[in-house]
Length: 236
Image (cartoon, rainbow, N blue to C red; front, side, top):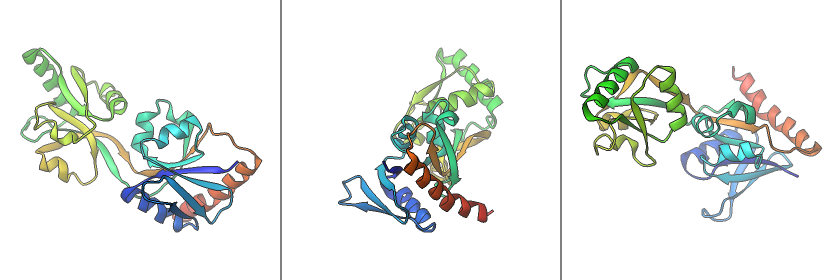
C-alpha cells in the first residue's frame, strides 16, 4: 500500500499547498495535463498524491479513501457532522484564511447583533407570514450557530453561487458566507453583525482516523508527521 495525500486540484489553494510542502522537503507536482487529476510526491517514499476538489477531501478522509488531506476548516466542520471522530488536524497551514460570517443589509441601521437579528426575524414573520431567509452554503454550521445564540423564525436558503448577490436579487434577506477581506460584502451593501462570526477558517492538513494502514504506511506516516509537525513546532 501507499499513503495517500489529497490536495486541492487547482487554483491558488493548490499552488500554496505545493509551496507549503516544498518548504518542508516534499515536492508535489501535477503529472500529465491540467485536465488530469494525477500527481506525484518526491522527498518521501511510500506516498501518493491525489488531486481532488477541496470540497471532496473531507468526505474522502472520513471514508478512509485517503490518509491525509488539505482543505478548509469550514469544509470539514460543515460536511462531517462528527468530524473529530473521523479526522484529526495535524497542522494549520497559514493560508486560505476566511471567516464564515452572518451579514445583513447595510441599511438595516438598527440591526448590529444577533439579538437584533432575532427581533427583526420575529417581526418579519409577523408582517410577511413567512420566515426571514438567510442564504448560505453552510447549513449545518449556520443552523447550529444560530440555535446556540437563540435566533429563531428564520429559514436557510441554499446558495451555491454568488451568495452576496441574493439580497440584492430579493431571494434572501440576509446571508451567511465566507469572507476574507469583506470587500465583496461591502460592494453588495452588506455588513457583518458584531457578534456574527460563525467560524474562522484556514487551509489545514488533516489525517484520517478511518483509513487503513499497514506496517509500511504507519512507518511512512511517522516520517511524514515528523517533517510537517516538527516544522510547525519550531515556528512557535
